[in-house]
Length: 151
Image (cartoon, rainbow, N blue to C red; front, side, top):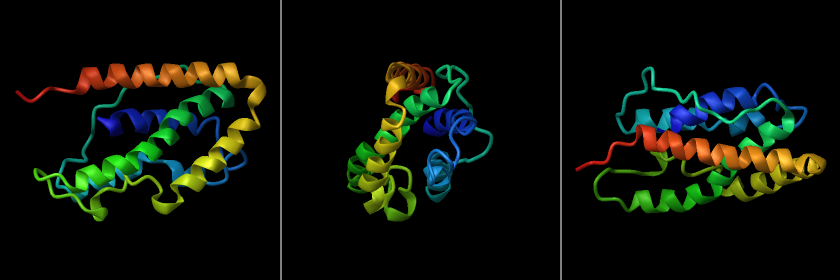
């Protein structure tokens, strides 16, 4: 579910944010971590279903707004990682929790660096906020579309 949202969104973001804007952008492509984790727990990594209802991104400010959502999830992901490692149903450990582990002990500093970049585009805050909200809404719709409750 996450890969289907992250991968196409990261692809669009990469059209507007390169190393000249965010020097470690390549390290922030978390869809690769999702595939690594799926493989580690024995799940299929073949041709996943990809989201096509994504936020409208046609500027750096829009891309930063969408990226705000993706980068913000690295903060909460660390808490999710700890919960998953206690899960009795699936055996999780550090070797298959790359995505939810964020950037490990560098998560906080990467978040701070990202906020510094956002501040450089402060005059376009409305566009960033609008796109961040749209990204949350698109992710919610995507999850509702893909998720099948177990019953």
